[in-house]
Amino acid sequence: MKRFIFILLLCELLITLPTPAADAPSPDKPTTGIFVAVGYGGRRITTRDGITVENDVEFAPNGGDDDNCLFSIVYAENKFVAVGGGARVGRIMNTTDGKEWKEVKTYRFRVNPVLFGNGIFMAGTSKQLEVSPDGENWTTAGKIDTKGGLYFRKGAFGNKTFVFCGDISNKPGPRDGWRCSTSDGKTIEALDINLPSNQLHIAFGNNHFVIAGKGGFRQSSTDGRKWDDASDKDEDFRSVFFTGKQFVLNGKQSSYTSPDGEKWTKAGKSFNAEPLAAGNGIFIGCSWKTNLYTSEDALTWKKTSSAGTNALNEAAFGTPAKP
Image 1 (cartoon, rainbow, N blue to C red):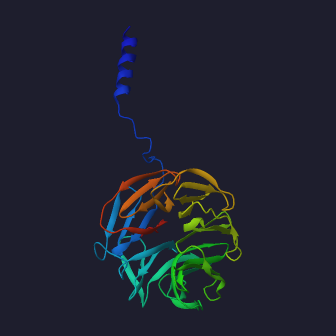
Image 2: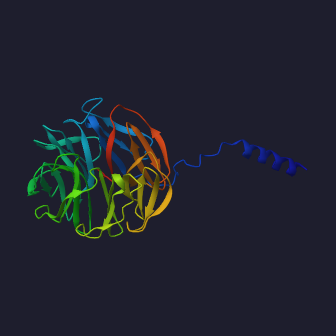
Image 3: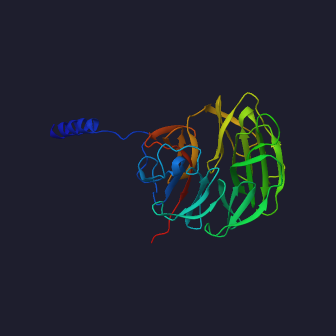
């Protein structure tokens, strides 16, 4: 009889204990690396879990599309390299831990984006490509020979090839989209300045590049030179991200997945976040203006923070070397 009463009391105790939320981060997920995100006003933050924000610093609150803005960041060679700026000043900054930053070079125009591959860092500014072996010492490699105002916006590296894209005012009316490929920053290949979308997003994974934008523009390529069209005129694509297993494409109507950027499957509703980076077993993303999100599959997102006044643009994940 006593044993029966003990079992009843134990059951009641277990029922009253709080249960962890289903979407809480798993305690056994590794957290050795950090995310570093950059944005308007020169904002820089670090986070390990997409929830707790640390080292939140900025040049100025309520920043705009000006010389303080940081647009892009990459992690390689044991450091984070961030770039940005505006019409008067372009800037390149480094950090090894997301806490201590140094500005290593300035330009007369915005620097954006920054990538790493083939053993070099590469970034765009004005109509030229800058390269660096270490993210600190930069030299001009090649120039894009075209008329009109050309602006770098996004880029991706894969299959030993860098692909850059953006918008260009090469004729009266709305800007067109453009893209090019290069392996070393010196030789510019496959330059196309008449793409139908001027708001482009690009990612690389599973041996394929995927580029997408407004008006349902969507293409894929294995080498960054020859592209296969898979456009959907009923959509406006807002972001494309490779999870490590598949591409996740977010549109105005729906979200989509694909293993190779050629065949797409509707995955569900569109989502608010723009995926930024993966690490520590999670994905982090953002939306205008200061919203930060986390996800376990890059399709379903949970808002975790809306602190600050400056929006985030891009993030990178890395594991800093121990001092």
